[in-house]
Image 1 (tube, one colour):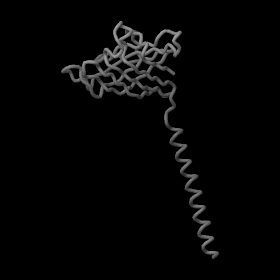
Image 2 (tube, rainbow, N blue to C red; image 1 turned 90 degrees about the vertical axis):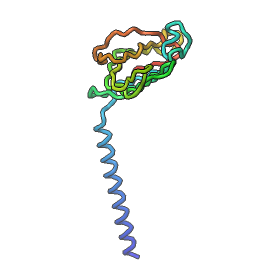
Image 3 (cartoon, one colour; image 1 turned 180 degrees about the vertical axis):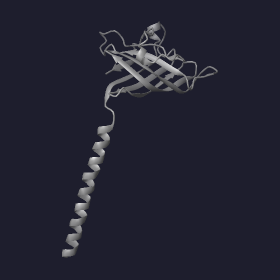
Image 4 (tube, one colour; image 1 turned 180 degrees about the horizontal axis):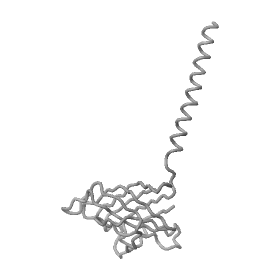
Amino acid sequence: MIGSRTHLVGIGWAIAISAVLLLLVASTALATSPSIVHHVTAGGPDACTGAGDKPGCDGNFSLVASQNADGTASGQYTDRFARGGGMKAVVDCVRVIGNRAWISGWITSGRAGDNDLAGLPFSTVVVDNGTSTAQPPDQISTSHVGDETPCTDMFPWNLFDMPQGQVVVN
């Protein structure tokens, strides 16, 4: 009887020590991951209505990007074209000034007609003008494919209103 109690106490201590070690390892891993300083999301039926056409005339897009405190960036960008094709890309650059975000990276797969877009750079700009209908609509630029302009250059791409979509720049 006493031997089995001693054995149970030993098992209890082993579990407690294991739990403490697990918490230490987990907190160290979380502490070393980069902290996000900016997060950008955008999506909708492209900028068709801003150009006077019907929503979705040029497909749709979605963007999720983050900039870390150490300057690194990550995210994904998908732009589907209305007449077939489109692109998927990884984000490697995010620059935020106020409500405007410049995004650039590299296309991982995609086609525009007979052209393979994989491996080409891209850049775009999005503007968060708020969520109220009393505010101007959010804005986006087109996807600039094959242009190696990094987001840090903050190139003033032409912007189009996007009343059916949503841009959030934090």
